[in-house]
Image (cartoon, rainbow, N blue to C red; front, side, top):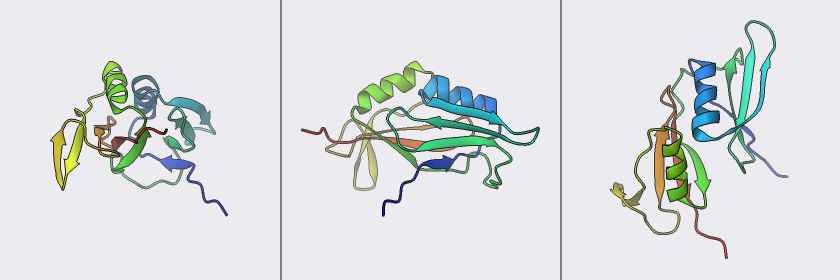
Length: 135
């Protein structure tokens, strides 16, 4: 049996601001923006190429405070291109870094060890990791 993670709820304080950030600045695709009355709105966004989406909204029974989700991770083929795309979108993004033990060091590392980090306007944090090329 396959178990597939397909949706992660990201707690935000302002749905329109968060939608703009993820859609326009980061480049996620809006799958739907659905209102089901005055107290329910669900916006689903998917990173290009991903099988998992995020949901932001109102009335979903989520009690996580805005900005409390930490360590979401995306994987890309080219961390430098991802850094350039985020920067072009106006996202405050870290330089490319790698880890030497527990220490974060600026610059690229070996396979699976090159990252950039950013946060959304509420402080939900993301890591972007480069995966090794596939031959």
